[in-house]
Image (cartoon, rainbow, N blue to C red; front, top):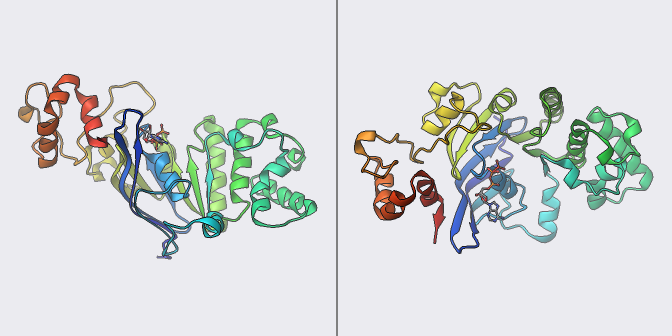
Length: 317
Ligand SMILES: Nc1ncnc2c1ncn2[C@@H]1O[C@H](COP(=O)(O)OP(=O)(O)OP(=O)(O)O)[C@@H](O)[C@H]1O
């Protein structure tokens, strides 16, 4: 197998909330990404996917853990070192329009990253813009238009072209196709797969649509309450998943988009046994971790129920 390009070891990120409590958005996350590989990340809203991506792209620094690029520890990099390193890892966001300055024309917007890293002439930048549009199959006549005059799918292609302008090795896609209709999504996924094939790109793809993630990814990581509860090849079926949350997700017992009752399971993966539940504590389990939690938090638990159980896992004072 080729050399691991991006590696996270024990990545942890905490935020202080206005009420003074600390939320652990990501906890002890380990991941390895290889050239030419797509790693899909799924999990319910708020489980920490975007926080993880921000740490990997070094838009945010982890409170604990290490980030390695081609085996080199880049966690504490600052200044010029960090600036130079950033070109290797680029992001594509859900709403590319927000990333484009409204008064910039397409050719200007798509080559903006190049201006930050090289001293190309205006002519060279226009030439490069033409190549980038061609790469994402956008017509050349778009060069002098404004991004806001393009469709959502076209703008997302532009977002991908811009992310690839610096020829990064890693592309982090945060809900990059979520705002698009199904056929536009399919076209973009095909484009990403083709670009990956041509350039050996490593892609990390965060998405709520499990079917889409499965079709695009080589491996899938399932996140729950800031923790990776399962990591398995995308070809695996629900029966291969061990954690009940991952299992339910892969079985598509519920959809992340609909309003079904929220699935709440213990992080340790042990399924709560109804027999062992003390009255008023819906998620008391035999597992020592959760028993400990229930014992110390019992007054709040009995007062507010499952949501508080979740809070107990993620918040600290
Ligand atoms: N800057 C911040 N300050 C405080 N809390 C934050 C901050 N950023 C994220 N959070 C919290 O961290 C948790 C994880 O957020 P994150 O955006 O990573 O989740 P997500 O899985 O990407 O959600 P979604 O799928 O809805 O985008 C959430 O509870 C969120 O409110």
